[in-house]
Structures are given as C-alpha cells and as structure tokens.
Length: 192
Image (tube, one colour):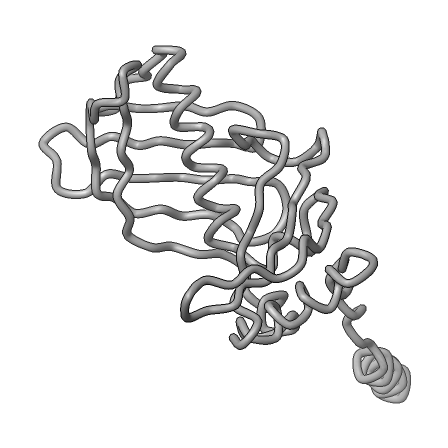
C-alpha cells in the first residue's frame, strides 16, 4: 500500500511540476502606424505583462453630477472600485456624507442607492452609468486601447509651441462601453 501511495504521490508531483499557466494573450494592437504608437504608450506605462498581472483598482475620486442646464447639482468624494479587465463593472461609494450614496454598474445596468434606498431617476442613472464606465476607460489608458473593441487610426503629429503630440483617432465598435460619441482623438506625447 505504501508503494502505491508513494507512486501516486510521485505522479501527482510530476504532473504539478509540469503544469504551467497558459500565457496571457498579448495586446490587440491596431494595424499600420498606429500599432507601434500604442505599443510605445503601453511600454511607457509599465508594459503589458505588468498590466495583465493587475486585477483591479480602487482610488478616491470626485463624482460630479450636473443638472440639464450644466450646473453642478451634486458632488461626492468617494471610493471608485473596478476590475481592470473584462466588461466594465464599477462601484463608487461616497465618503464623508451623512446619507451615504453608492453608485454601481454591473456590466449592463446602472444603479444608485442613497442611504440604502434605490434611486430610480432615469437622468441620474444615465449620467452615473456614463461617468463610471468612462472613468474606468480613461483610468485604463493606454491599455484599454488594446483590450476594448475599438479601431485606431494614426492621424499624424501635431505640434504646439513646446510639445509634439502624436494623435490617434479611436472609433468605438458597437460592443464598446458607453461614450458620448462614436469616436474621439487621443493625444500622446511621443517622448514619453
């Protein structure tokens, strides 16, 4: 019986020793001249391997909501939490207010709790959805450019008095997270 146990232990140890994690996929870089630009930005921000090893993020931020005319209707300082990969899942918990407010986005729907009770105002839900998803996107730059369903075009350099900028046009696919438009332009410093 000891021989069988020893043999099984040796086999299991051998299997465990041979097991390796499957490598994470590399970045989905755009074709043409935009690909090396995105790769340089990723490298300058710590590299793809480091980014891939990170699971989630939490940071303190200010969440501002506006009325229909553009005036600030509320402002909350809170803790933003979200995973860094996969569909956008976001939670924002207010800090230091008498009636706590929690905003969330579960990948499909936004929700708000004020002092533990649901808030169902469509305008507030729409704004919180956009704000939370876009904050996650902007926080994840430049890595989100290589993870999300977007098309990227190199628009060439533009210079002002002191700085050269590399411009990329980012066009969102239908499956991309919320955005106020179909495309936007990102300016990158080619030196950094």
